Image (cartoon, rainbow, N blue to C red):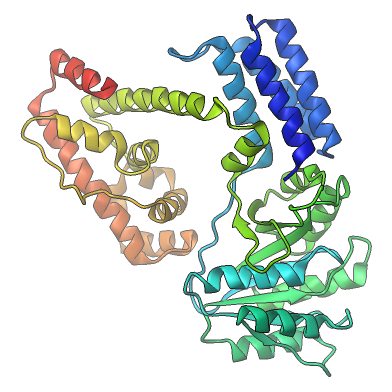
Length: 441
């Protein structure tokens, strides 16, 4: 996958690892190497220059965290900035019946195959899935879908004698009204084809999809950003499916598309078979590009240093009587579950927390993030003001249920009560020192 780019970036990491001294000359040399690698991979020039500037500024101005050498810190900066360039991944969890995904893209991008791959992916996870053929232009589009659908065991809807895709989609949605997920495979179109773009815009308004997914061919190169922008202006793109990532594609153009739309990559196609699909994991993707080697242990070390810092701030907040929903969320993110909060509580005599309490899954964490981001600043700082009408508004804004909002608030108030008990015990400096020693363990 993106073999040439991977080799170039791996050599950058090896160069840093083998150097005796990290100075301005080395930093500038590393930045030039990264620029060459990304430009050869067809990443947009402006994005490359912005990335170069950030890496150089951070490398020359930031002091390494205690416990990391300058060399290790430089590797960490390169990793973090390339992850930021690639963008965050997006997790799509179908909610409501049916959850509608409008799949759009230019001709030849692999929308039809990607629709079946996506349908198969969710079908294997227990979702009842159907695909609607809204491509009335390409000869054989419906036949291809029917053939692939039969192979994957996915139901397909299409009409051979109907030329209006809006009518076809309306009939298909009626047929699939009790399905969990409906994927709408639209006709391929180009940014210069005004009529087809208008049709796509109208289709998006009528369907009112829960997700608009742009299928992007990883081989498209620099043109990707311009195409993505044209689609985004007509039907707001929410996520990207990168197809054909298994070949010798340069692939960097896809990064430009992410930047143009602000959308996040949700899936990548990694082969020709129906099951050749992966959820996009930006950190794993960049780790593969850079060649893991010692990078994994370095990142783990940096993560642990960061966790200790989070714990220190948590204790300071507790002692000052501050504990907001933002604090709560930051701390559960810190170690994936209850994190520092749980460990702090377990260290204090007279307080206990059941093993199953505050066990928060990744999926639940994502929901919590959406819920908190749908709150006002006042609600985050003072959750006690959140009443029924606010709960309904927050649930609607975050795409969750009122029950899930209440669940988050209950989790928060459980911990907040424990925090009050800790403060009442009056933590003394020696107690704080003991806590910090426990954290280092």
